[in-house]
Image 1 (cartoon, rainbow, N blue to C red):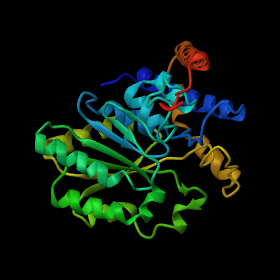
Image 2: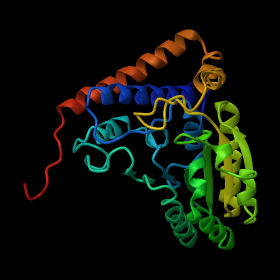
Image 3: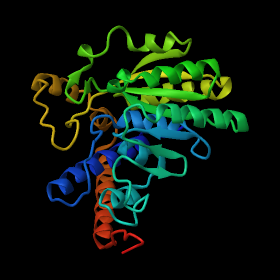
Image 4: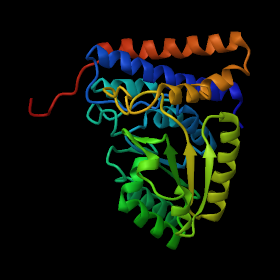
Length: 300
């Protein structure tokens, strides 16, 4: 089991990386848009550390920087990718949303990766690898029919897949209360899939719970669905001013900041050291990327 300081360091690394992206975007140094996960770091870190990274597969979505860093620890490759450099994880051609690195895959199409994740889970089951697949979606993706078609098949075929719904309350600017009727987890239970609701701010509690669920799915080779309540402190994307939500709401969630909750439990000197190390690593990655070359088309 990971120690709290290690989990905290990963969350800080993700937070500082996302904050750096906002700074770079304001200076016109990035290619394409960005969707940050500031405030949601505990979900990515909790799940990534519960997995067997030698065989398990992660299928992410448009808000996937945290998932990627927690699973791969590849800050340098991701920075280069978003800056459009050929040293990026996919040679500067995928940008923020289209990543591939060993067992990590992402795509920006809402719900588009869910049936693909099913196919990966089926392949691992047929190969008898004992690997499982994690498929991340957001509350806004619940409007896509392919999500339910995929859950139906995963239940019928008993696939080793965990659907992770990060419920950050807003699909762009639409509150989940205005778009999703009924109880979210009952949507999965209708397909005879075990499902439960989890809180996504306490990394210790979340990590322990996720480790149990991962083991259960690995041993049973059956799908699982979890709805993890979380909150993005930033906007939907880089140009979102969040005018659709109140400052009172934002402050109430800031009180439950997953980083702050851990900060209060660790020695302050350790916290300062962790933050310094993370910032230095990110700044080092940026300095290197500035010198890296852009990809060139073959016919140029």
